[in-house]
Length: 400
Image (cartoon, rainbow, N blue to C red; front, top):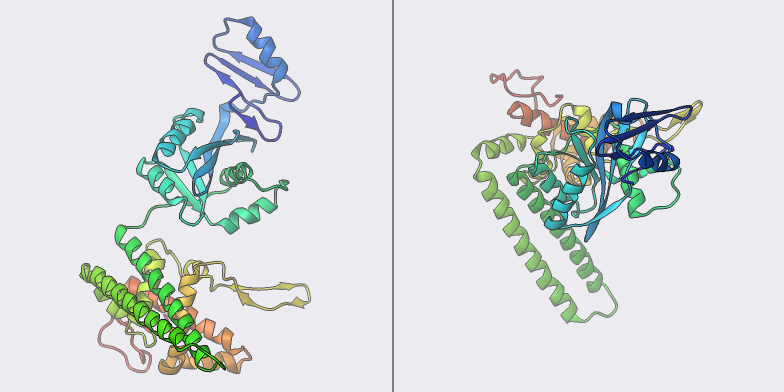
């Protein structure tokens, strides 16, 4: 049997024969039935429902790992009955991709209804398959692991295996309206990789500096240890300089983008590398449709904790891109000192009883909105816009 159905729903299609049934009665539609024995055999083994005539959606749920991936094919009809196949395992390479695609297309119930392929983020192990399917013209959806994890809690499954994970992803895809994934441009991919390497090396430099400081004040330290760590610092700094040079060359190859970055850096507290990290992580705001969406993507959206008379602590969600939040933290501190508007915002929030960290996060959120506004409008920032009306109407107020 090609399918195993949820909710006791099963379906079997043989060339020339289609069996359909409900709980109260059995209906049989036969196009070609040459052997009566087939009817008695399958009728005794199947609990069938009227399923195939009104399928609304067909999708493939994929759980990828380093060497292979599990996949399940699923459909849903107008009665909200789900049909999910048994799990199949394929190698996570080009040969396995072709075999998987042939398997998935053989299970589709209608060629007129598109098949979507849904997978969760698993480091980098899902990327090759996602690009392969997209190059073939299929709809690909990539979902964050926390969404799949939270959805799995609502199901009755207690175990966690790769086949079960594939089933959970398939059911999630059948029940939700998801946004199709589109791969970023090679330029954006290169910038993102370089910017993340830059952040990683800067973190390593901070760790090494702290280690040198600790060794210098220790009761006993081998001087050769400090020498090696200082050589490591120089090597890390050399690599960082190479990364910055490579990033600069990439942006200079696209003059329009580099000019827009210089306009973004007119915000006091925002440097080139900060602007580049934000642009790389947001794909130059290509898919951003609103400020609230951008704030949520960065994980800077406010989460309330209130119920009845209870007034819990208000925090930010942190369910977003951590690289954006990290990139904005130090610039927010700098802006609170050098940017008059941000300084006033910080002081106002503290005077209202907010702790300094919460006020700093609010400044970071304001900086992110400013970067987005300047980039979309291709304009510069002016500090005293309200006090002095600029001649250039394209200039944007800091309250944007």
